[in-house]
Length: 314
Image: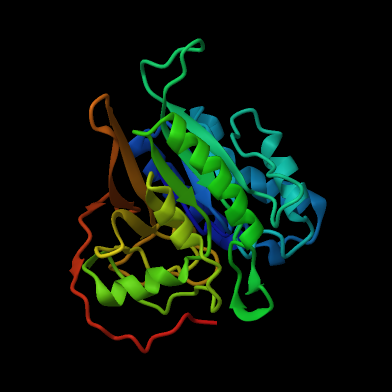
């Protein structure tokens, strides 16, 4: 899988550069699936229906031309312009290669759904699930009436817990991956208190109120990987060795050129996720960053610094 995040299509002069990055990554990696973790477009630049549809087409154009399916969740910028989240989901689902889905109508957000990945031996008559991708809508600004960034709400967590528990009971060796845009507060905490891998060049834009999503993922037992975006100068992976040593929280690498950008030698790119399935060990994963310079990045080790005064950026 390739994770594109923060493409920010819509700032016209920069769109060609963003498309170039997608071309480089897709041609090098030849993924089976692309996942997009929010801010596909800079909605604030989209003032007409024609403009919005054109920019969404730019977002998926390189996957369409290579016949690569994709699935996405929304960020805080996508619906700032002409289109609502529901209208953007309708546009995305109009492409045959889109695997995106509307979530339940009675919970917060639009892009709450799951996508099953089956084993190679799976058949229509005897389905075997290797992994489940859980897409969650983390909103935009404000969480449960608190200042700061958006979050995954309790009703979404309740839905996620119910659905993921059923998969864990039925397929105990499968792997769960949770994808959303805005990082959970624990991501920042674990960077300072545990060994991490990757770069952190800005404050984490996480919600100031904790709704308990991380704990719900820990309680499930089969969730092994979280993929988020949002902070354009961060790409690190971290975890809590004490709480859940097998559950990693990972930023993607910013893909697009819109909005603000990483500073070289940190270049635009994507996170690559490889899944491996073994009947005895179940599903495992590996990941690395591929950047626009075509480099395969080995992410540097970061030792815990115990700086516990840093708070989520608002």
